[in-house]
Length: 327
Image (cartoon, rainbow, N blue to C red; front, side, top):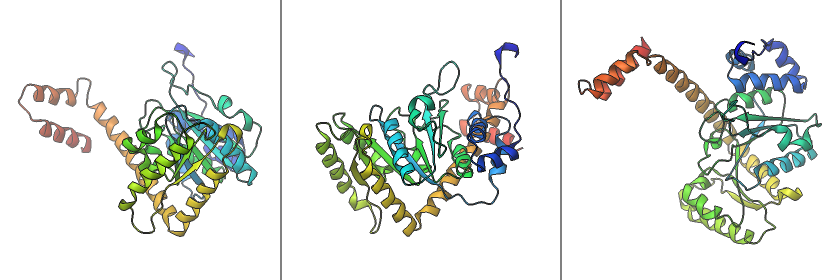
């Protein structure tokens, strides 16, 4: 291809979606690729997925600071869920390569133990600079996996820090993973990441300091209990040793939260919230693109010059841009 560019062949979206629903891993991979790349067929895929079939998959989000064993925990959870007979999809959001824009870590590296399991779909997605620990197209990728008939979708965030709270807007149940000896308990409480957790898991619980970390987290939750209404979910604190596959406590806590959500009608509320966040993000992205088109020598540069010169106030300049977009 000229300039080294690659062109992805145009998909027969209907046929690929039918194949995905029949269990084709390749069809799922191709559809997720269209979504992840934000290609020209993204809208076509989105329309095809909106076929009136309600989503029933349980979306499980897992976040936490680097080095706590998120990928190892996801792999152990997949093994445990498969033992229960659940079909599982995994979306692992990775940092973007500064050269290709693709994911720096790969699904073959992190999930090799499940590569030959027909009941597991694994996909790495590049964050492409999107903040909040997820890729901008993660919600659409979740829809593809739901259409493929998975029972559980596990979304692992990029793992770049404690500001990764966006996953709480996507997941039915959010797990914050911490580890002893890293100061995570105090730092997480300060950063407010405890507020997004439905379940807190102290991984590497066989290490010294695990009991202290668990105790500290439970104290932090107790201090925040006054802000919860009667009947609200109280985050669980559990121990895991994911490297040895010891995630039974975590799995039990996740199931308890799922049952509580169903009993209290929270599942539908979460799905509506997730859809609202997704639609708002797409609308803002479209508006951002339109505003960008007004720059580069256009109206944006014109009003910016007037603001800089003191002949136009910034609110008036913004009003002109909005009027131009609406017109």
